[in-house]
Length: 326
Image (tube, rainbow, N blue to C red; front, side):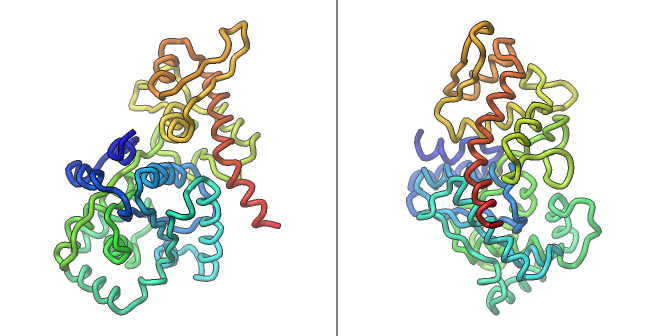
């Protein structure tokens, strides 16, 4: 797989394709980031973007993870002391999950976001950005919560972070799209270059195939989950024998295979008794999805394999959490 294939694999959108192609021509030493509000325990959403970061490291890029303590404070997630303790737990889980420590730089937002130059540039963005524009950028992240002044400042800081971290590329889920579009529009207005962006998909709710999988509602999978928890959640997941269910639903089991399992394992083995045809081996997601749709692969067998591979991915981070609690 060449650099462009690694960089663009499992990406919902590249903004712009041409800029990303140019970056892929010489990726060595280029800097890419994802910002995370410290939340303590990595869940499947964190792991999806982490998979993308692992791809980018394999392509030769340096990864910056912003542990966004100031953002978390603005979003009412606790005191700085509480937030930084949480952030340190997340840092150790990211490394346990598979990020290369030599190619990964962890940065706290408070290391630069409280400096005078940053504050002045933030005020420049505030002067140049309408209230409605900032609120639209934050809407998908904010959810149903009543807007506060801090929520309007939040996306402007995200835009400015990309300049102050000296980045060549930004990565985020599709829920970050409006923030990144604001960055591309507004950074040039204060004298800085817009950067290209990769957006990863948002997975459907595990139990219903609707909406999006969320740690705040519905069923999700995290590094706190035991082997038994993962098996129970996956076995109860929505998994029709189709990659494209009707009524605008998604197949979350196939999504997790595509975005979590196949990027991390060269071969996926679905274990079956001999009387049911014996084991099936897959080197690519498409073959597994085709077999599910044709009936060659039963949903229950797919779920059994998915639970086993997810547990293998989660196990190192789960062990790290146990160590931190001792």
